[in-house]
Amino acid sequence: MSLSCGLVGLPSCGKTVIFNAITAAGVSSYDGSEMNRAIVKLPDQRLEQLIKMYRPRKEVQSNLEIVDIPGSEVGPQGNGRGSRLLGHIKDVEALLHVTRCFKYGADPLDDETVDPVRDIETLDLELMVADSVTLENKMDRLSKRVRGRDKDAIQEFADCEKVHAELGRGIPARKQNLGAREMASIQECHLVSLKPVMYIANVRSGDDTSNCHVAALRQFTNAENAEMIIVYGKDEADISQLEPSERGEFLQALGLEESSRDRLLQAAYRMLGVVNFFTTGEDEVRAWTCRKGDKAPVAAGKIHTDMEKGFIRMEVISYADLMELGGEAAVAKAGRKRVESREYEVQDGDIVVVLFND
Image (cartoon, rainbow, N blue to C red; front, top):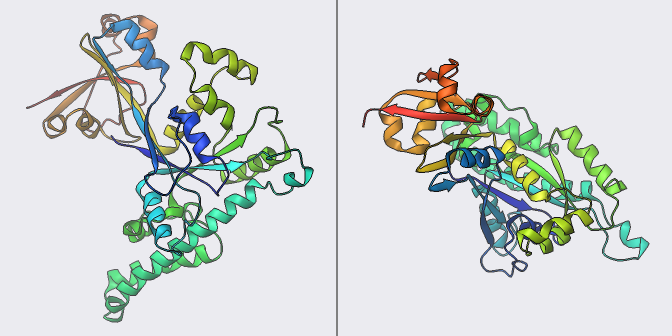
């Protein structure tokens, strides 16, 4: 299952620095050619414990693609670059919005220019303007059918008009509490302000992480019921270039027990609404990803399409039971190994065996 998150933010907020902190890619800022992209492995202590238990010949972690989307001209205006960047935003499942919560130098006046909430609202406005244009284009296409009294078109037009009006009031699509019918009406529009967002407070070593800028951002994210992660962007980007054995000492100097990278990636997975399940054995221990609420055949299809087509049943052991009892045989003896049907919703941490007709 291919998942991707796009780093967005205004120019000079430190997106590429955050990209390097997450991916250890060590790349330079966007130069107008190819965007920075990297595949990162999701840290999962459960997988590490399963590897210790089974000692497989091969191990596979879940992956997440991180895309560093340039921080200017995201709207439809400009020389064509804006529309290309908007297309990149549409291509990702969720946004990691980087905000500047640091000042550049010792000049106290510089501190007055730092306003993460203002920066968020600026970018949100650009995305909403782009979405408004997209909806207007769709309503134009629907207008002929509306004049012909097509009931479906009339309803679809009304739904688009409602979302468009709320955008005009400054409410991004993700905050509009859209119902299933409205979501179906706007589905083909791929509205960028509908995407889930997590916020990153980019700070620097020596900064007070409870400073007024971080506090303002936290108040904003709490009101939006969104996650916020504090990252020492430049420092953690530098640390990511060190050997793993050398990183701990420098993280401790920042007052961190672990890199922000792991917390950020785990929070991104939660935001995407996905779960990890596992297959185990001497040959391979592997983490798989499916959407929360996916039924057993759909999850089985992530392993192989033939498993979804020929699905019979799924044998399931919970990770917690396996760790508590120490092995599959003990779990089965305790009566905690389950056989689930097609209607079973796969849970985070399930260890599965799929029975199917090939």
